[in-house]
Image 1 (cartoon, rainbow, N blue to C red):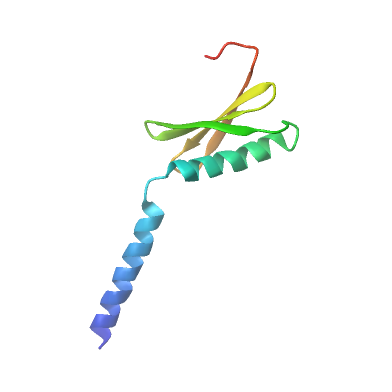
Image 2 (tube, rainbow, N blue to C red):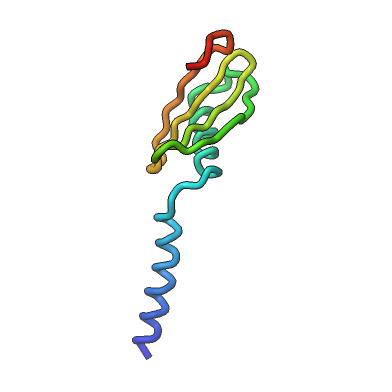
Length: 93
């Protein structure tokens, strides 16, 4: 009776663990970027609108548009993120 129960526990644990190890989706990257940008701006950036999400190698680049600035948040697969800011008047790199 213990062997079938142990098999079920291992199977359920494997399925749950596989969900944690799965690659990051665009939606997850956008959520992390939005949270990071809120922390970066602390209410000083005004209204921001999401404009684009793209994956380049193992990173996600998430772009946001503000009234006078553009923001790009680089999100790594491990959840680390970094914000880059450009003035809208300056040419894009």
